[in-house]
Image (tube, rainbow, N blue to C red; front, side, top):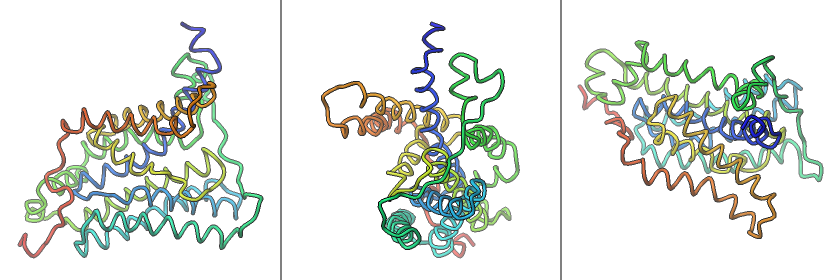
Length: 314
């Protein structure tokens, strides 16, 4: 058993599982704030894409990966602010606005990428974050390659799990978020601003989704390609349901998808006579199947997706 866990193939699979799970988990962590506050953030995919593009461009132009990460997070927050403007302040349909933002960002990033870098054979790239080994811990069987042989953003994501849990369950802000998502009219009468709380939650959601997008271009690959997220933002929405909008649950659900994604990548190299598209479908099919069996057992916030009208509340 020890030789199995120390096998380079197994270690590579464990590292890959975490690497593929992390951007989805970060976006889903942001989605926790939005959905617990009652806003259905369909725009997670576009937010991730904006963070991925902006982070890559800034890192390429400045030579600093961390500046790229910061820029990607700010781009994500900007998208969150746009969503908040329409879904919270104006009261537009949250699903329609989210889908529109996703489509807009797909086109905008493709256009801007060609406007900045041109259309050439050589693809611009940056030197991505290198794995940061923690001495002693990275050699622990199973846990070592999974948790302690990763890029710096992965460690940041792991730290966010207890931080988000503490914020949501042990702070006044977290209680206000839950109150706004469950009974916005009652929260307003108690002096909690529903609009301000939801706006702030969408900014936090955008920041974390932008961080997840930055991870794709600055840590996982070192390049940017059109529609780089490939639907990962929508998977993050599914993971929110599977994880019951709990940080630890979201992490476990993201790891399930990451493990399935890493498995399909290795399946393409086994010589099985199947089109590679069949392997690409595997993690998405698995997510759908898990949703079928477990989605009905999840309780949504009572006000999720329902615009708040302050005049009616008064």
